[in-house]
Amino acid sequence: LRAHRERPTPSEVIRMSQTQVILDHLLLGEVITPLRAFHLTGSLAAHSRIAEIRSMGYTVLCQVKHEGRRKFGEYRLSPKSLDTPKP
Image (tube, rainbow, N blue to C red; front, side):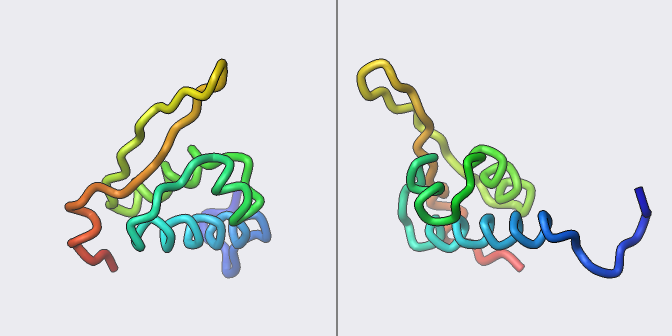
């Protein structure tokens, strides 16, 4: 691994834009589920994008939902994160 890259790799660019799309929806007060994240970004790893948003300093709440035998997370920003602008 190189310590410093001049440009992000293509996968980093894709991941950044997926993260930004999800963050933009969360900042509007919307709820994101893995299925919604897939429809918005094509990402099958909503939990990873949420982890990246948390690493940016946002507090993301997760409520586990059950539909029949399926279980999934429903993500939203905490009210505190909605009120505090991040750089």
